[in-house]
Amino acid sequence: MKFNKQSGQALIGTAIAMVVLAGFAGLAIDMGTPRYQKRFSKRQRTAEPSLARRTLNLHRESRQERRTRRARTVSRTITAALDA
Image (cartoon, rainbow, N blue to C red; front, side, top):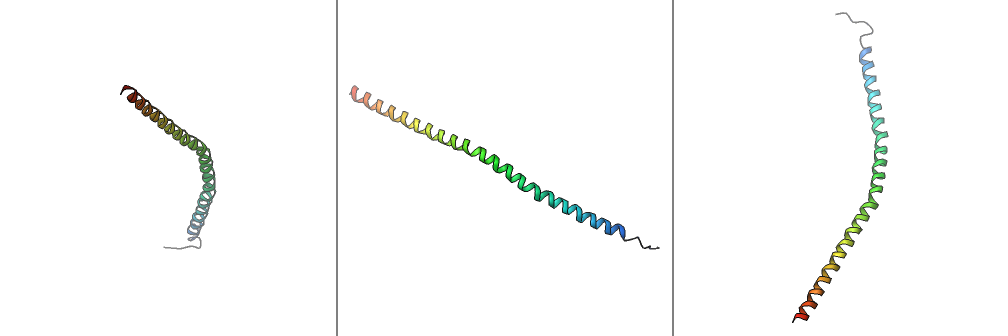
């Protein structure tokens, strides 16, 4: 087996290429994370008012249901008092 002077160059080239690829992967992750967070926060800001609106509407509906229930109770009480 005969070794010449160029036998280790492929190994060094491969190692350098792997370091460069790992650097690009890290850069892509670092640049993608803020972009994702910005998009997520924008989506969340858009959803918050509609969620609050829905919550208030549910609260109003439950308040309306309570009023209706009270009105029915008063009506039954008056009807029972008149019938007696």
